[in-house]
Image 1 (cartoon, rainbow, N blue to C red):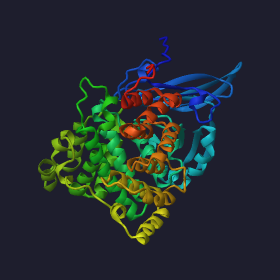
Image 2: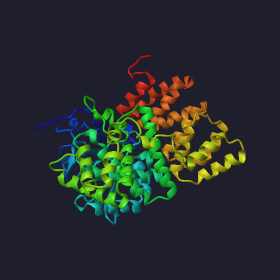
Image 3: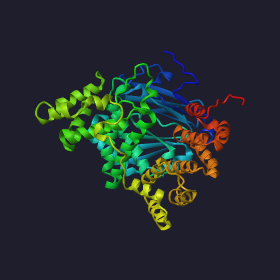
Image 4: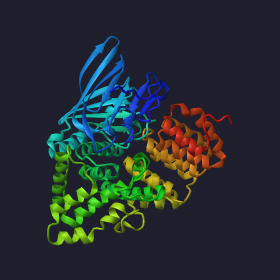
Length: 516
């Protein structure tokens, strides 16, 4: 089959040198967005079909390439370099990725094997410093002990430029992370652990279609949380649990009600998958563990189930009903567990219900961090205002992010005086993008006009949709800065990828080819 993709392929980001952080060479990054792999190579573009592959990539001298699988041969062909990749592990089409650029590459030796870091040169030293060898070793040791067949002796970590949107899925043998995370500590660790687990689960579980993606996403979140709970203290465990539920509530409130197992008839998966409440699936697994058998027995079941998925993946794709049947066969042949399985678990509500299940309905949960933020909003005593900020300045980045997020979600508007004080507590480290982002949105919320330009500078430097869209929307809705937001977009869009441009055109009500 001879096949040639289009330069306008929706699965490929062709970054010009000006769109990269280094500014010297172009960069190619693929993102199949679940069903766009067909725009790169001919394939059965469904998660139920997995295959091995062999690939050759020819690049100019000075460029390197990365793909899923192992690179075992590299040779010169005149003024070009030929990379050969092989994947002996069957993977779905969405997991086949291509990255080509003049990138820095560093190999780090670990107890469980090796890790290759790939990043733009601007971020490579920061990536090395942020890389926590002990945590990666710990995670890989757990994974390799569970299923030796799908061992992770080789791990690739690819640091994406800050203008690339977050990937919907992780791929076997590689974890993608944004350069915007490099300044964090706990937030970075959480992301790396979660992405490694998801890439591993995605290799084991072959789902029939994307309606059943929770069997990868929610299971990954459940196992990741178990692992991270062995690394962090009790306070951080509570914060992560509450954050998970609150984030789920926010997704439901912002994007409407979407079922855990959505009906994707006549719907492109990419248009709805990001709104599916996968945290609800993690809560379901927690519920089953608590009421069905307890942590130890449920862990045994989980490992048995994953091995079953792996052993049958060559001829069987998994649906939600298959998971439920396997669970019944393991636990519920007789006795109390049958009653729990049939009477106490409202399966239809968990799988197809819209919103939170009844056992989690109620007010938004709060931790000590949230309570402190709530008190600080109305605190008038200067010594208490400074005391809270002083405590916040020495806490970890996740606590700071949750504190700021709570302030922004509050209907109360902070004074500029308090924002000035808060700046010294949270912005002494300018590398944590999430903290800068939230603080700038607080400034816009209180109508601090002088901070409009710094907010736009941030949104145009870190112009992934996660950061650019909320800031431009905030400034567009504020009539005083509406024209400023539109003019900045028209003057600074060249660094943005097409989907970010499309989203901002919709938010600002403009088209870049408009003459007005």
